[in-house]
Image 1 (tube, one colour):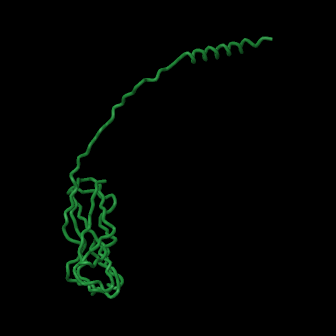
Image 2 (cartoon, rainbow, N blue to C red):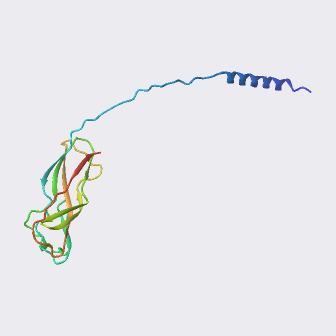
Length: 177
């Protein structure tokens, strides 16, 4: 018994298609070139100009340790041994550290402050901590290219802290984003 003619025709067509497909070869190109783009933005250098020092004013020596918190807005709060408003002389200059930060208009920037700063008076010291500023994430230089930066911190005052003028420096780092 022979297979039906329709079956043989289908097999012949399949064999013919396979033979044609196996004999066709496609060569891949040996190289390829695509143009790339390049760009450079030249920005004004960032500048920081100090205006006013971070000043806690005069503090009456406490018998118990405490803190003086000076906010970037200039608000002062106290804890521990420096709780009373009479502990900080109201007539002395006090306030946040202020700076003018200059950069490229419409460019985002960030401000970095140290976590701890040591103020010294001879061999004695006090610690500044929790330095913070009025800068907020995503800040952008306006059309004047100037940002007024205010820096506050927490001054840690020891019990019976030695009298004298304590001073130190801190770094303010500004970076384009």
